[in-house]
Length: 332
Image (tube, rainbow, N blue to C red; front, side, top):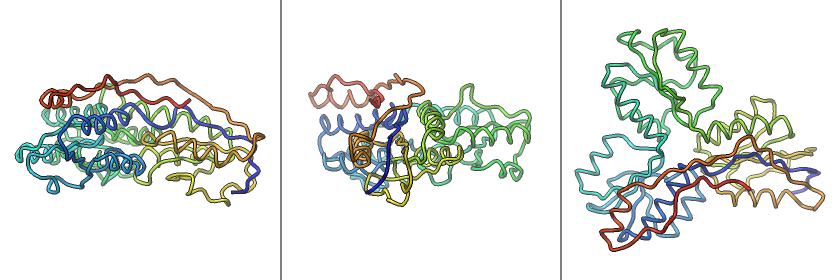
């Protein structure tokens, strides 16, 4: 591709978060200690490159549990599952390893608590997203879904004084704030979680893009089309007045996007491997005259432990888990 790029600016942090790193670790460790085959329900994380790599290592990806033989090992994806799916696995005697991100689990537990206390729960999220489907399954008769602030006016609830809200973890911070403000205006006594449900990694990556957008001519967001957090990064850049494009990898970059561009910003969704950032940067950096720098807004040191069932399976099969801890891979 022919460009007149003078500088590439990398957003930091970008790429893998602790929940994604943990989920990938779980699949790789399961392949090492579990008798084959090992099944994974849905994409473990929303990135084709990650899924293809794990498939090559032996993981079998399926859409639903009816594709998994009885008594087999199945891993649930990082996005979480509904109680109905969990019960089906129990009934069929499947050996389950749950790779649900702990921050998604937090939202599920909040939904269960509010439902038990008799609240109508308003979930802010995107319909048909795996995370939303799982969360809605915790209390389907007491939960309503909205995506935009203008939908609040049409909400009908049994008791306006008994309403709670939750949010999908990978939403736009700004858009979610607008939804919550609209909910509070409509339902003054509404309650919500003590701490924002939007995950730390989503917030950090959006903050980095806001800083990046003011410093470049165009932003390339590397991530999958079905990745909510990657799509939100595009929206954040555009909302700050800078053109942005979502790409799976370097092959998706169109030369016309870069016509007259001097500074290119690059970031990546929380499910995107850093190698894809490196490939894009190398393709754009045609000469030593093109400089590279990073705009880093925060350091991340979040760690999530592995599920206990993984260690139990390893013991049952006379194996030891490698001494590795799921850590968010830092972009350096």
